[in-house]
Length: 193
Length: 104
Image (cartoon, rainbow over all chains, first blue to last red; front, side, top):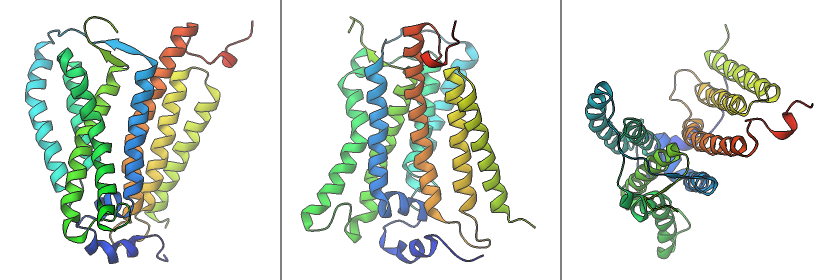
């Protein structure tokens, strides 16, 4: 079959991308602008959900014994797996979206098991977590322009570290956004709107 | 012998067609949302299946990247659609669009 597509182009330029895994190089370097806009789409979906309904923060309730044990056993492992997926994304299948999805699964498991978070955490700390992914991505994308480069053109010796920084912020942000989307509305603290 | 990548791609196309049919035919909004998710799974299957169209080499990384972001965007779009459906239900009492309701 005749070769078509961008596989040859990616393979020839990957040494300048800062990572070894071609999918991560495409996501965070060659097509980084698409990933930037995709973080914006996630935020837009959250803004849409929050503007449509608001839910009161439910009280903590005790889960059944099985769910309690499962939660205590699984959530630390899921956090570890998310951290590993984030780290290994540079050289093997992994990266920000995969780690963020595992983080969101841990968050949804905690919510399903009746674990509730403090009302004080649901205000600006939550908002900082949610915005941090897109904010750091935009900061790095624009910050490299200070040295005279174009948008998202990482300097070669810092490309790997910048990609890891962006991925770390994106992981936390994606996990927080997907977990809060599970609530189905803007969480309001005790005391009403 | 048909190329294996085409088998995956044809399965993805048939999933897309099934989802499109269900989206058009069924009036209940939850079924429409599930149909859109099935269409999305079909599209992801096409993307990932056709990434291996050249046997014996590493797969094409660009469709993989598109599928990764696509899955996360599909999840958040489904969340937004579900909240919209809940608002329609709260406003009209039924999770059916006004022009789909049976005429009396």
